[in-house]
Image (cartoon, rainbow over all chains, first blue to last red; front, side, top):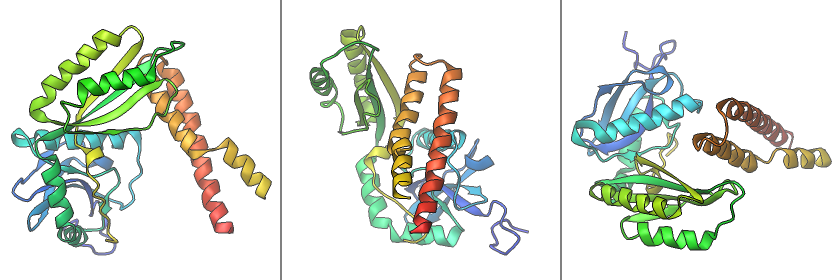
Length: 221
Length: 63
């Protein structure tokens, strides 16, 4: 019996957990360690767009550390699939009851996906946290300016993130053309060389550009 | 009830708990906090966060 028939008593792994949205031509399918114990990721398409999904047994997945990491890892694999894919990433937790509900959303949100894909095509997200050493006083404004002067000319866009610790001097996400990543790496290395005695630079990525798309999908839409 | 709510909200500020969870992870990743201490703090913060979520939902239900 098919697992996605939608019949009562046949709901095991019949729902769809969404990682992101791609152009429908980018037919993505691979085996991996996916969210909630699934082992395969594939694409469900409707017209121009496809949702990259895995099967799941709930529409309200619990965000454990492990599954949050799997969500990020799958998105990274999608980005690297077949030489590189542009994907509109979804935040953790987007799960749909079945294919019809998901296809409705894909159809309804076409303009938003078109805009998002256009904005992030060929780009990656990189993160930078600048952390002061314990018991070291630093000039936050001067450091912020120095970092901006180095990185902003290379990045296509950037957004500030929360300063959730008093040791954080700067926390920012950058949208960078893939071709410019090496230049960005070198700029970070230059900053580390200049400020490494008093500051720690935590440089992360590349990620799917979560911070630069604002597409939220849900069954109610 | 109002005093009790105030006391709880001061003890369990959800945003502050989230910040402490993030800081705990950051300090662990930077090597400034040992793994065992990181785990202990995370467990404690998660527990307080869940308590707050339960308290908030039961308070809403009471209103």
